[in-house]
Structure formats: C-alpha cells, structure tokens
Amino acid sequence: MTTSPAPASPPAYPMARTCPYGLPPDLSRLREEEPITRVRLWDGSTPWLVTRYDDVRAVLADPRFSADAGRPGYPARGPSSRARRQGPGSFITMDPPEHTRHRRMLIREFTVRRTETLRPVVEETVERLLSGMAAGGQPVDLVQAFALPLPSTVICHLLGVPYADHAFFEEQSRRMLDLQGDPSAAADAARTLAAYLRDLVVAKAAAPGDDLIGRLVLRHVRTGELTLRETVATAMLLLVAGHETTANMIGLGVLTLLRHPEQAAEIRDADDPAVADAAVEELLRLLTVAHTGRRRVAVEDVELGGVTIRAGEGVIAAADAANRDPAVFAVPDELDIHRAPNHHVAFGFGVHQCLGQPLARLELRIAYRALFRRFPSLRLAVPDDRLSFLHTMPIYGVRSLPVTW
Ligand code: HEM
Image (cartoon, rainbow, N blue to C red; front, side, top):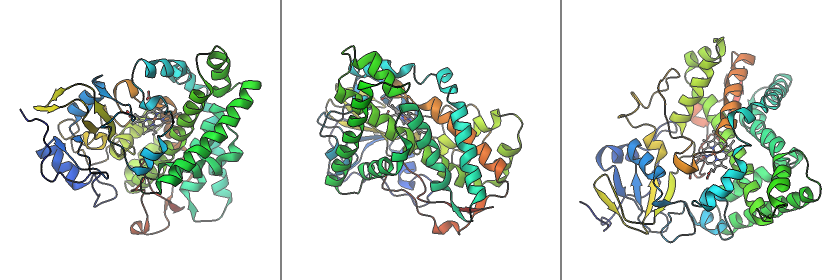
C-alpha cells in the first residue's frame, strides 16, 4: 500500500501537448504506468492525478471527495482561478446538501423535454448565422461567425440576458478564465460580470419576465429560498458555462471533421439524425474540451487503486485521459462516429455531471449537420499549422478557424 509522501519531483501538471489534437504524451504514459500519482501544480502543491476511466468515475461518484474550492488542499487551476474565487462561489464548487438545494431549483429547466422547447430558437439561430456567412465574403472565421454566436444567443434567450451585451460578457468571461492571465484582471472581470448580472437580476426582481432568471426570481427569490448573491452566482455560472464550452466544441469539432472528410460527409448525407447524434458523442469524447481535469479534495482518507489518499489532499480526475483509456475505448485516439457504446465522461460524472448537457447536445447535433449541409465544400482557408489553440484556457479549443467553401 502506497501512502502520502510525494516523490522527490513529481511531473508538472498540466502537461504540454505535442500535437493539438492529441493528449499530452506524458499524460498517456502516466495512465499506462502510474495511473494514480502525484503531480506538481503552479503553486508547488502536489495533488494526486487520476487518469484511468474506472478510477476517474470512482473519484467523481465518491462523496468523500469534495468539490469545494475553498477547502485547504483544493487543487486550484492557477492564480487567476484562485483570485476570482474570493467571493461566494456557485454550486459547481459546493457539496451536498447545499449543492443539491441549488441544483434542484434548476433541474426542471434542463430536462431533455424542456430543452426540446428551445429547438426552434437553435434552428432559427443556426439558419440565420449560416445565411449571414453565405451572404458575406470569404474566408470567414467560423469561430466568430458561427461557433461563438450560436451558444451565446441561445443562453441569452434562455436566461433573459440581452444578446446586445454579448461582446461585453464574452470578453469578461475570457479574462476571468485565462489561466495565465493576470490574477487581478481575472478577479476584476469576475466582479465586473457579477455587477452586470446583479443589475439584471435586480431589474428582473422588480418585473420578472418569462425567462430562467425571471422564473428563479418568482419561484425562489421571492420565497426567500435564494438570496440575490446566490442568484447572481448561478446566473454567472450558467452564462459562462453555457457559451464557452459549446462554442469550443463547435469550433474544434468542425476542425476535427474537416480533417476527417469522409465522416463529415456521412453526417451531412445521412437521412437519419441519429448519425449526427452519435458523432456528437464521439467528438465530445475525443476532444474533451474541459481538459484541465475535474478538481476535488479528499475529506476523509480514501483507498483507491492501491493508494491511500489522505483527508485534505487534492485530486485531479483527468477526464481527457479517461476518455482515451484503451481499456474502455478501442483505438481511443481515432475519431469513429459509429463508436458504440460511448459512455464518455466529457460532461463529468456523479452529482456535478453537467446540468446543461441536453442543451449542449441539442446545439451540437443541429450545428454540425446544418453547417456541412449548407456548405458541402467547406474547407480550411489557411494551412492547419497556422491555427492557434487555447492551451491556457480551462476549456480547450481553436482560437479562430478561417474557412472557405
Ligand atoms: C459541450 C458543452 C459542455 C461541456 C463539455 C460541459 C462540461 C461540463 C463538465 C465537465 C462539468 C462537470 C464539472 C465538475 O465535475 O467539476 C459541467 C458542469 C456544469 N455545466 Fe456543463 N458543459 C457543457 C455545456 C454546458 C451548458 C450549455 C450549460 C448551461 C446552459 C452548462 C452548465 C453546467 C453547469 C451549471 C454545471 C455544474 C453542475 C453541478 O455542479 O451540479 N454546461 N459541465
């Protein structure tokens, strides 16, 4: 049985990718050779890194691992994420029963059935953006023309945030999340965004409309269940999680499909939408855009895979490594849109599993198919070694994607 002392020089985490489409080679090596091991973070701390699929799911399903970013030992992603977490966080960093209380207030907003009511908004937005692309000059940056405005428009519609403010909140969100940005700039961006949402929530408290924030106000703020601060924290989580993740999945997903034209053609030509549905799952698995690991801290001693993780020690459950674990996924580094079963952990696992996944799926399923149908000859407008990737963001993606058709 191994116990706590860290090896003399644990490897630094996160590890560098050598290919923008692949896992960092050192991460794959650890999964094969030392699946539960210590790594060194930016602040010198040495949490455990868990890389195998079964172990990642075990960590995320175990209540002895806390998601509370305020607990000592929690492995923060960087100085900026620590700096912006000074205030009360949202429920993504809470544990039950507090987490359950918050999540329960939102569950009915994100069921598969409820999300289907957003289909017309998603379809109309997709059509409008694609028509805008067709009407303009070429090349087009697909990130700015399609990948980002689609989820931004949809999350604004759902929450009741004016889309006219999108440039503002997209910018604050980027400043807030950049792991190598200035910590005081990240904290400032978080405060600025919170102040903006506070004004919006206050306005809705006076005159609630038929949108998610309005419904939260009517059902939970007016009853005293939810404070103004908590409502702002929830709105901020939904606004940021609702656009960054899906936007990067669209951009990087399209790029991946352009590199696999035969699979893109299948999505385009299939009458059965199930082909696009399966392709979305495969892209979610392969790309795992939330690529900096799910962060937890042990609240009790836990034995896992022959290792004892002591109370107070941090744990990083590397979903990207788990999603390419050859023990679970055959030929894991290859894109196979027919892969079945495909029980990836790209949306996490356990109580914090992504609340917005029905919405993300709806947007992605419509977006990829409609794009390749409208532009069957879509191709990169620059050599692919000119593309730049979001290595320092907690959500991975391609910075811009110049395309032509
Ligand atoms: C492809 C797009 C998306 C990906 C890859 C993704 C990924 C994730 C992951 C990995 C988690 C788990 C975090 C953890 O365990 O620490 C999560 C949680 C969450 N996501 Fe997403 N997400 C996506 C889209 C969305 C959308 C569209 C929304 C909202 C409309 C959303 C809202 C949330 C919320 C509220 C949580 C916190 C859940 C909780 O703590 O109970 N996500 N997401």
